[in-house]
Length: 235
Image (cartoon, rainbow, N blue to C red; front, side):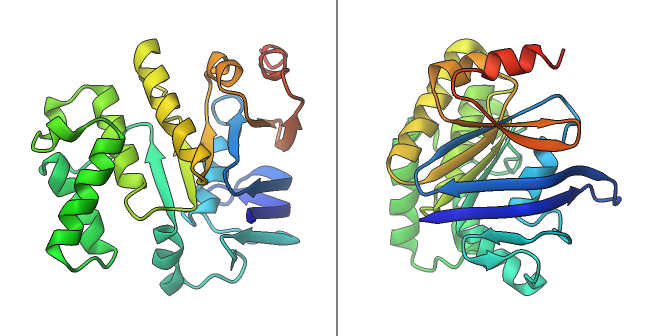
């Protein structure tokens, strides 16, 4: 099943400046996809088009989870985002709420009503990411890796078909990076596609996937096993 189908898409930043053109990009169910490139090359902008933080105005085809992004109405954006999970480098947890309350807030905001079902789902995702014992902690009481695990738990609350992760390991130490990547890889193996931007080429070598590169305004698929070489050629 194809989850993302972009053909000849132009990506523009919020102020209208074109950052990528002629983007052809396909993501299938359960696929693990990396997007690499220098800072400012358009990685984050491309990801933002997937969850409609940035509009797509020029394309031959721009489909995400069966939604035509060229004609998507504002009122339909929340329904689109409920089908995906979004993970940010800076976690974006609610600082004034415990781990459990962060997750409870999302479930209630996405239509969950029954208290027992809400609590059961919170326990389920926290167990999956190894954070059960931190349920009542505040975000500032957690390490960076722990906060990212909670962010991933938040992203999978509604059993998404797709996870979009913008530099999810960017500020983490190597041991913590391995734990986060093991977690994301396990999620993809259960059928959820993962699309993540990264500068961490050793991660790509250790956890192989489909690799695309943003470079000089273009978006290109990278040959398997050549991500390190492609990156070095950009320096």
